[in-house]
Length: 615
Image 1 (cartoon, rainbow, N blue to C red):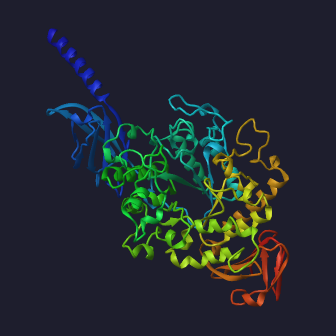
Image 2 (image 1 turned 120 degrees about the horizontal axis):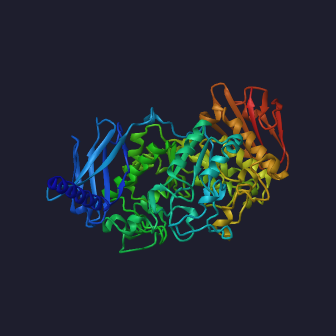
Image 3 (image 1 turned 90 degrees about the horizontal axis):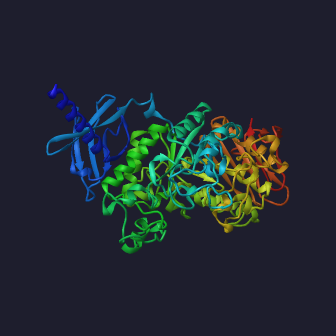
């Protein structure tokens, strides 16, 4: 009896000891992985007070390829090879002086069917960019969350307004009706900055959806709901920096986990130093290693642990949430070699995936440098492996061209000149084309809510080469003066909050002007879904005359003629000039659905676009 009692006392003491030691393990990242991945060697990070005092092994016959301990004893990085390892539970064993102290289970999940073959967004898509905090509030219960400093305050343009993932899901039917086929949401991961956190580019936990937007499961559900509608989800991913409130920044694994001077120094934002053959070392360092802002410490992708952490995190989200693509913030501020390695690892895992990088430059050669297989990059033996870049030079042009008269380099000639330089890009069809985004001036503010300018602009990005991107609210004429702060270009979508006086998500709730904007957008985008010529057809453009731009999109017998009359007066075109591409006398105006006779001349109304499906 006494021996039995002694056994149970020892067992209880052992359980208490094991529980207390296990409690030291505060985080495990990635939280799980999948069997059958191209990236089969996975580096698991264990975090907890003095966790490095333990040695770590794996109970199963799985190869441990490396164990890294940093100068911070609260971290251990353990690499294991999972190739040919079946889905199931792995047991990490933590020992001291050869004695087992506790075991941590780790799951290798089954991959979803055809997960490796996922198709990314393409030029057949139209992307809708939205800021979740300003789009729609579907769940008021998560507007403010305990433990996260920035609370709901709709009176502040830079405050949190309560939009969330549920609000997006609630309005997917609206987006489907509009004709968009993919959503790019600005970041949804946790951002615990005390202010301005709705922006969410200063992330504090990159394995966790910000609870004010919802949960990881909610995000996964958003992708599922989109896929039911044959729509896609694009994640806004940040490789260059985290937020100062990130839990790892507060307890750095190593001094060089972030770029230090020591501490903070501002970036000079001179991305040209990435390829300038005459650059000074200090200018280059301040671009690449400088912090974007003081609240966003710059990650050091030259550190192999950092780079591998970022690679795994991106792949984890793609696999977990069933994503269709990424948009990478501040792509060209990263360490060049590090970001190329990161990009290649993702494309090796998902060969048909798509990633667009934000390369905010104003010269086509400099932007083209960053696209995969660029001959310009090859001059310096550099390849980013990045499929897509953003066409900021076209954006620069559309901010001015529709208010200018014709001239050698003015007005609609700016569009022509932009596409002349497409020879610089390895794949012009995979450029992101846009009138505006969450960082730029609102198009409808630049042109004072001018419907004619909007029609010309939307027609251009919807029918030229590339992947068109629409910014939320443009389709109802939303405007905002950026000179009054970023909040002005990120206003709430009317109808996204229960007490809103107006609901522009509903046809009956739109003003007359909003209805005209919406109906035009809907007509163009839904037609575009079925136009193979616009998706992948050859672009043939004619030098603008009298501020009128004519181009054709052709794919076999499928041919579309686009005319943009940027004049304040009607214009009559001599169609003989376009005889090489215009081999028919009949077409259909896709806006009005009326037949158009194309004999010798064509008259186009002032400030009007025509999209003609040639018969």
